[in-house]
Length: 337
Ligand code: NAD
Ligand code: UD1
Image 1 (cartoon, protein in one colour):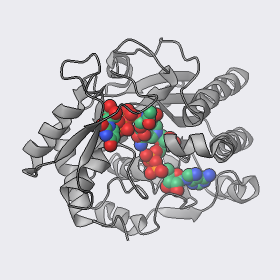
Image 2: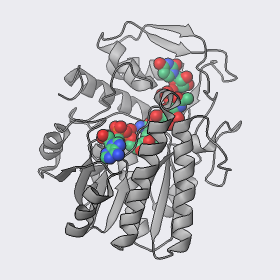
Image 3: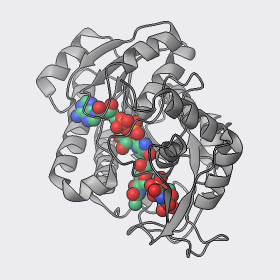
Image 4: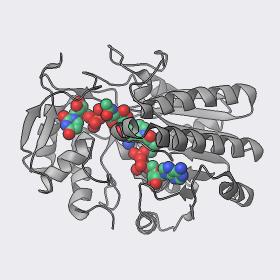
């Protein structure tokens, strides 16, 4: 398939491009570089042996994106492009709603106009909101998220459901990612956040290379066995192969489908620190701080549906992810330059 990958130079997008080529597909990347570097392209070429076609375009810009649809014979779209920092979304809600909603609407409009049959949308476990149980299944209610970022995912899911109802020839997959971590085994691709990392794994890797003094554990008094928050950490390469499996599913014309992409296993913050130390031999100093507002005690996926219907499941361990995340961070102490 010829796959248009929006946000294809970002963390999950770049790993997915690698797996697309591995599976015999071709990737056409659109990215406006608002949270990624053009140098990722060269790294993709190093890994895959192919320099993917790249357009530096904002997906909100209908006039600029239209020629890509007109000139490239696109069979499927994977729409990763979006802003994703929860804290920032509370400070700049307008920018988040504008970028995430308008880019998704523009892509959907062009999909309809150019009769592209297949779309995969990057959603998030955040659509399950402040749920008090785990694991969560795809049938759990999607009501309202906890922050503007999450709301954009809830809204886009609803919009795409309505569009698919009106255009039954479209196949649309809503993929709800849990916590992607890790990087490519080559050390060439990985997570490259701007400024102070918000998420656990990039913070740990920056402590590991001495860029930050110590990890701040957000609360150790949750109702979990060791008191720290539990999450479903999925290796980004497993997440990427989940997209390849989803494209195969879309080829069977299933209409609208929804899948959790996680491992089905929970890991606490303390367990993650242990795993990292085991995988890398590097000690992670930490202090326990107050809980972060809006954090859940426990979040992990029920993964049976993806396993059954996509024939896919996560293969890599948290130890693999720690080793790969550290490898990338060590090779790229200041991110991708
Ligand atoms: P990322 O920031 O690394 O990648 C997103 C890419 O999209 C970046 O390269 C950015 O430059 C680009 N982009 C943003 N807005 C754009 C626009 N209007 N036009 C063109 N390009 C644009 O983030 P990621 O971690 O790779 O996440 C990819 C997708 O998955 C996002 O939609 C995110 O919300 C979703 N998601 C991520 C996580 C996670 O933990 N990383 C979890 C759940 C869902
Ligand atoms: C966060 C977002 C979520 C988003 C996801 C992926 C919030 C409230 N939620 O999820 O919407 O989809 O990132 O981008 O921001 N932790 C620490 N110290 C740190 C960082 C994190 O102890 O420096 C703890 C957290 O309290 C949590 C766990 O580590 O228990 C994982 O945190 P994080 O990586 O930020 O992911 P989520 O909170 O699951």
